[in-house]
Image (cartoon, rainbow, N blue to C red; front, side, top):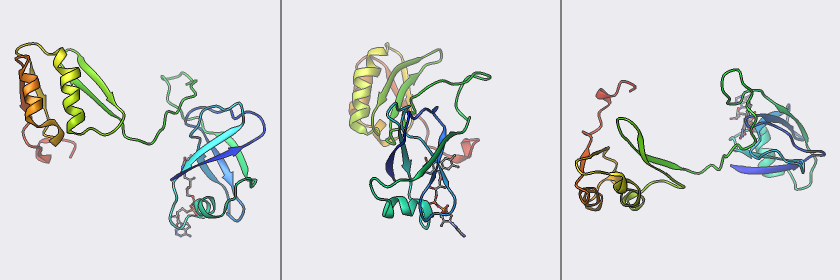
Length: 183
Ligand SMILES: Cc1cc2nc3c(=O)[nH]c(=O)nc-3n(C[C@H](O)[C@H](O)[C@H](O)COP(=O)(O)OP(=O)(O)OC[C@H]3O[C@@H](n4cnc5c(N)ncnc54)[C@H](O)[C@@H]3O)c2cc1C
């Protein structure tokens, strides 16, 4: 996967979710690519393109296109964006950064507590930090914390932190597809 930037005359004006058609020399027809940047007064159009084995255009992009070479770019196209029903979405921030982000929170019967976003995948160290710094301060004596059996959720330090405020830790039973209606 690689990001390509093309400069056109005038500003690049488009909505999140729209795409443009690129036509390159030696490629039959044109191909659609979604813009990965935001509206650009400088006329910059950026695209993140995944190379397709045997694909005409993605091979030319990866191997033959030279810096400064002219291509044909036509767009924007597409009216499919996310918005409340019957309302047009006006927004300029696709927010795609192609990395894993984790959202952890405690779901109570009446609310969500201790919401936390981690810019990366969760591991044992990150989960221990979440429990000590975010979750434990929201717990009261007698609360029961129920979690699944993910390895990073286990460990004495997590149990000790929860018990330190006289709350309890329970693990869900081992996962079984027989008990999950979507499997
Ligand atoms: C609205 C829209 C937005 C898109 N946005 C993006 C984006 O942001 N990023 C992105 O990476 N892609 C995006 N795509 C996909 C993109 O348009 C191309 O389809 C993709 O890059 C492949 O182009 P290509 O020319 O390399 O492959 P093509 O040459 O079109 O080939 C595609 C596949 O078909 C096979 N194939 C081709 N001809 C034959 C044949 N005769 N017999 C058997 N197999 C054959 C090829 O081997 C290859 O696996 C989007 C598509 C749409 C419709």
